[in-house]
Amino acid sequence: MARIVKGGLIQCSNPVNDESLAVAEIQKAAFDKHLPFIDQAGKEGVQILCLQEIFNGPYFCPSQDARWYDAAEPVPGPTVESLMPYARKYEMVLIIPVYEREQAGVYYNTAAVIDADGTYLGKYRKNHIPHTSGFWEKFFFKPGNLGYPVFQTRYAKVGVYICYDRHFPEGARLLGLNGAEIVFNPSATVAGLSQYLWKLEQPAHAVANGFFMGCSNRVGNEAPWSIGKFYGSSYFVDPRGSFLAEGTEDRDELVTAEMDLEVIEEVRRTWQFYRDRRPETYRDMAELLP
Image (tube, rainbow, N blue to C red; front, top):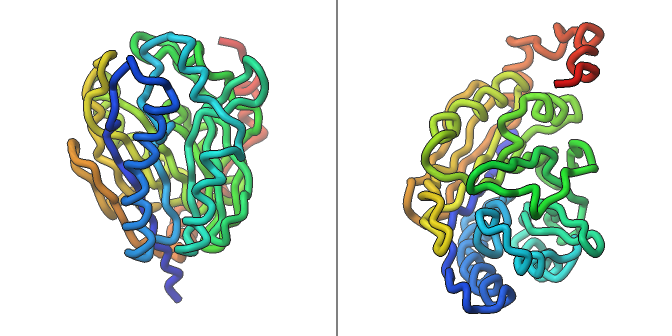
């Protein structure tokens, strides 16, 4: 018997790139731009909706400018709480990636998970933090310390991986072992070095772990940093590695797909990766230093 869940991804360009404005003004413009897409998702019957990485503002990590610390907020906090009514209104699970402030000087790249009744279920903190040209994330984010949680929502067991995390298969496997049926990866990635991996690594995670993935990426070029074109191409992929829906490279849009979660059982009965794992042989992976 089919168990269909309709998922949605919002890919969106940043509406304001004026560095003369206050951080709060820039954030409000980005937040407001997402609201019509959230309404659209609700009206189209999306049951689980994921926003893009740090959705309420630009990807500020090329700057190494301490003024962007002002963008951080508690989780749950104002942004998450302001979207809870949308979850209740549309009976829609929301995955809300924001810049989190835990305390003075301690900040994380975080995604909150809100259930379909507006209940806050918890959060994931990005574990793998890059620090390279144009992506100076260690200036802004502390590595996550919450592990790889899976959230039992009304419609499915949901896990979250954020952007650079996707290059690390270990966390994806742990999400599968923790019971994830759908893993969402909200991202901010530009054309260039890693673009060819965008549709390679995450379908591989889905196949290796027997779960669905929803992968979102913003669009456009964000001044004043202009590190490259955010190329969108958000998509859903099933446990066989088949693409269910794909977004364009340069347009603000809602990408949706219907996922039959019964496929997970079918696939795992064919590919017995969980049965045939040998965790007792993997200890060196965790113990060896680089």
